[in-house]
Length: 601
Image 1 (cartoon, rainbow, N blue to C red):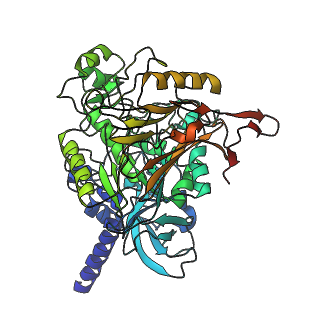
Image 2 (cartoon, helix red, strand yellow; image 1 turned 90 degrees about the vertical axis):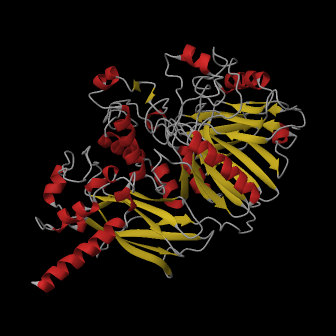
Image 3 (tube, rainbow, N blue to C red; image 1 turned 180 degrees about the vertical axis):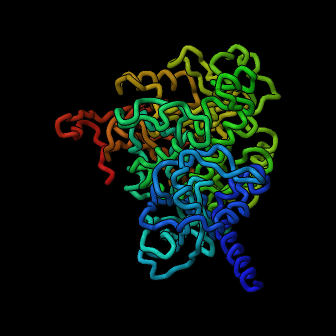
């Protein structure tokens, strides 16, 4: 009896350790038992042999693999191993005495209450001739069958390959590729980032992700938010990009299903498979125009609680955050102080990448589509905040410490335009009440000298007086101010924006796409790319403009963009567009004029 008990305890200990190795059992908070999964309870349930284990042939790596949050000696690896694409339907956690129940996956639970065991290995090549790390982890429907582990003992700024498999079987995931960051004090000659935002599934295909991945010219992918959108659109089975669920999302099941649908996009899956990501969220990962106490369509009121079926702002936000951390290859930042996602990455002596949250952490009230007069009255109130005091103080320390440690550049990843923006050339209201100056995702390209307006002199011809440079990118697929316009008409609107904002050096609103930052000790180069169309999945892209910042200059190098851009408008320079004509019979593009177009295979 004693030996049997010892064996049972040893098995429980082993299983528990493998559960703990899956970081998602502690999401979204390791510190707060009520917000995480009760691992001992899951282990206890798993040790009750009520049916046969999973048959590996019934399981699939449904959404490929992903990696992210690179450190010098470790990276986060992710996959999902499940009997179906269907996400877990429970909206409760396994904690304390709360019984486990899952509606959507009830048939799978009845088939087998056992966890799914996966093994992973990490090597220096795709053949795993040299394995540097390996391990075992478990997953269950409690965390939507996701697996997220931290692979360790890696070398700085080095490419690795990784793969998962169902334990003891040949059922393998796709082969993934990832990369560690440079060590903090390393002298690095060059690092490349591809920067994305605002990928709206029903609004078009994610060509930007695929084009950047196939070109393979950067080290890491950065996402600045709106990875998913919460609204419903289209009819499943009828519209190829209809949302799943069809309705606006609120429950944990809804958010899991929506983010899972986005990850079925082949270009997004490719981008995750081949690059380590550094993401942060914007508002639509939860709901439009979010702030500390609500969203534009839902606020902390009794009326709102009744209207949305008894769901509160806080529970909706927690559902969204839990699904985000389950599905994204992101480290679990200390959640003791609210919904924290802001964090810093030290890329050698070259730069610090400081990722902010100007939406959900502790933002004061913003425009809710009915309170713009109120926001207008508050816009200069010194008590208003985008980030909240703890994040603001942390942000200031990161900037100071980066300078003190001798990093050449400080790069800040945030969701919304930092520069002043007079929008009267495009919109009736000259100020965007959801923007930093009174901030919001804009779905357009903007490049500005950062200027302390009315405080220090600024020469827009030379750039003297600027304190930095802002590169803001268009959306992967969400509509901007060029939606429904011709390229020429959109460029006219851009010219008005440049005219009305003297620090704005380039504006462009027609193309969907992304930009790359190529950072060296001497200079930073920004390269903007646009997709001619997101109505179809295609590999075409246009080089829109290139910009340079010299180390220590704090402003754009003149002549800005070498005096010529493909689309939009420069403060001083020419717009020389490529003439694009789509051949609807062949699905190919005819290109004439200033030809900067290429196929990103």
